[in-house]
Length: 216
Image (cartoon, rainbow, N blue to C red; front, side, top):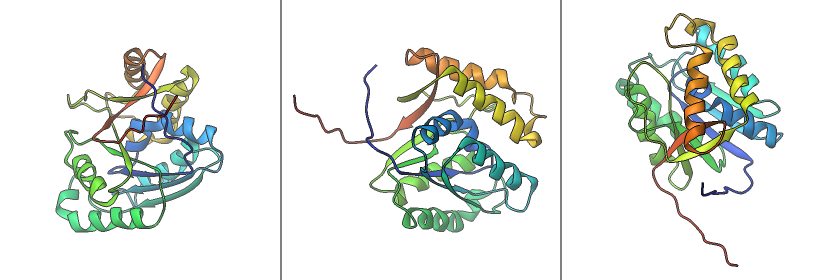
């Protein structure tokens, strides 16, 4: 596999429509980044869930997925499944996140996600983070919208297992879903690992980037 290096990362921005999207889509990557860079600034925006049990779940989950990080989490109360009808509020929130920090990498849903709330954020991200590396994460769910990813983050087996454990521990409100179990999460990370010659991995979509070729 060809390796691309971002260089030192001191701050990342995370965009999600729902509480648990980040943990499902990139929980292993968060564990890897935060353990490699103590004090990493993590600024996260979630569009839905404020004032519900899901807000408490998300706060505790991200604290576990971002050990040792400087975590700044904002959760809004836009109605789940209705974010396109609240376009202006979502746009303003993304703009505020972009203005309020200096992230080197931005993580957002991928553009071809079947859920309209996810697609909205995928479309908004590059309109506000115009000069950033934006990686689109995949969210496991019952729709058959599994993408063909272009970027992989290899995961140690214990991190993939830790991700699955934390998902089950911190999101009890989701355990009634027939697809929501440790086997599902580990199956996808194992598949992505096969595709990049690792034991486990998480996968992302990259719309565009520039490459600087180093000299000899």
